[in-house]
Image 1 (cartoon, rainbow, N blue to C red):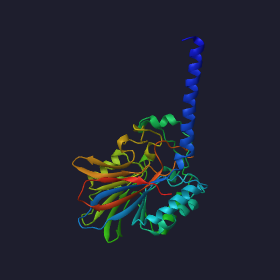
Image 2: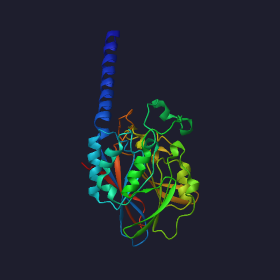
Image 3: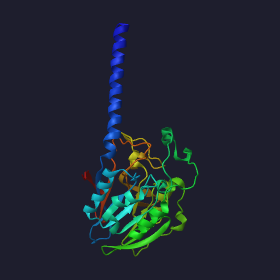
Image 4: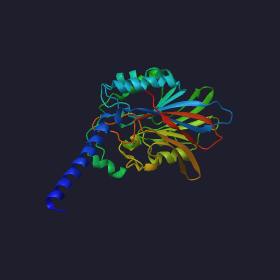
Length: 319
């Protein structure tokens, strides 16, 4: 092949690669990041004979004041008529986002609910070197500074609506005739978790005990499992946010393995295990408003009696 022909071929190949790359970026930033979906899973964790319980798991909205499409989509989730809402944090990304967030939750605030906070309930997102996300969690740097988001206003809004604060706290709720026992931690990613404040075996009189945290670090998952919690809910990972088709996520932004970056799996420790659901969440940092092969999501978990192994149903889009 002549040098001229080789040069032309190289230029054409470069142009094609650049075009495909640009198309992927446009899709990730312009389409998928707003292509919200509802996932559905069935989880056999209730006592024999209990009626099914519908739990809506929402996480990582990272709400900005002008995100009207997200507000409308989340608002429609009340039409699912869940029995319980579990919110695993990172609700807001701007000091003016509390009221838009409350508009999004809308009628969901009238239902029984529990919540924990993530870092973006305390601090605004800041630009970070993307390379940091590829480092092991212990090598990532977290700059200390005073909270600059209205987290106490957010906490009051949730508790005034009747939702239960599980930040390093335990609680019991009666939902549809079932005695539910909860323990939660504040965000392990920024080391605000204090599991020792909620440690101890689950209540044997409870129909179901649920562990709730923002970031699914192994130390927290192990603690919940060791204390006998059969169901643990978390968020934080964004499902990897940028995934490789077929291969999956590259990172989890914590020490959880990528096979559990989102969805329903089983977490075992010592001689015990729990159903673990990690939500890929509904938002992103405003400094990285892209998703690829990892649609933003909420999840409807249908809890049923302990009979069959954990099973899943395909996700369904809610327009």
